Image (tube, rainbow, N blue to C red; front, side):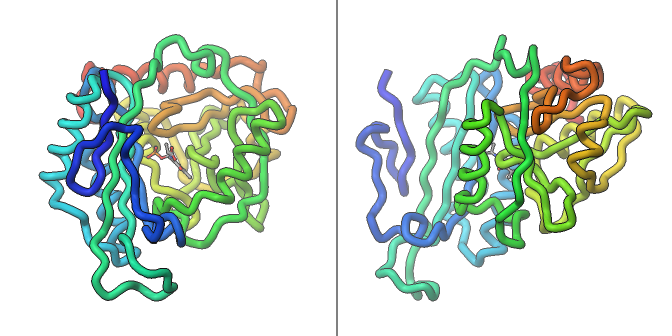
Length: 287
Ligand code: PDD
C-alpha cells in the first residue's frame, strides 16, 4: 500500500512529498507541530490537540492553514488512505515560503504538512519493564508552552540520553527543578503516595496526555499536586514516569543510574497506563 503525505492541499506519495527550500520552517524553525495518537483507527484527544495547534499558531501570529473542520477531515482521510489503525498523525504548520529575511513576510501563506506513522504499541518493553532516564540542563527558550518545531536542545538532550543507554532526558531548569522530558512530561509519586507533576506555565509544554492523566486521577480519587520537583526528590520517590502521545504512561525505573523504588514499574504508574489504554480504546468515557 503506498504511503501518502498531505502537503499544501495535495495527497502525495510519501517519497515524493517535498517543500520549498525557502520554507521558513526549514530556514528559521518558524512553525509549530502536533503529534496526535491514533488508536483503533481513531485520533485520540483530537480536540485538545487541535486546540493546542491553534494556540501555538496564534502565539506566533501564524494563521490557521485551513478551518478546524477541514483539518479534521484531512486527518481522517490520511488515516484511511494509509490504513492506520494504531500509530500517530503528525501535523506541521510553518509561516510559509518567502525569500530569507528574519522579519515576517508580507504575503506568505502558511504551509501545512501532515503525515501518519503506523506503530505497534502492544507489548513494547518500555511499558512492561520501564525505562532509564538521565537528567540534562534545560537549554531551551522561555516559551516552551508553544509546540514549535525548534527542537534542537531537545534533540541534543535526547541523543545524550541514548548515548547513556537511557530512553529519555529529564530537563532541569536554572533552579534545579525538573521542567519536563525532551518529548514528554515528567511525573513522580512521592513516598506517601502523592502524584506530582510540574504546574502549567511557559516553562513546559501543556501535554495533552498530562491533561488526560490528571482527569483520570481526579476521577479515580488519586491525590495529586502540580508543583516542581528536583532530581534528588525524583530519585528518592516511590515511582516516576513520563507521559506523551507516543509513550502514554512510561514507567521510569532509573534516573542518572539511581534505581527508583525497587527498580520495577510502580503500581500507580501501571494502573494509570492501564486506565489510559482503556481511555484510548474508548472503554472509558472522556476522562
Ligand atoms: N512530544 N513535552 C514536550 C517537550 C513534548 O515534545 C511532548 C510531546 C510532551 C507531551 O505532550 P503530549 O502529551 O501532548 O504528547 C511534553 C511529541 C510526542 C513529539 O515531539 O513527538
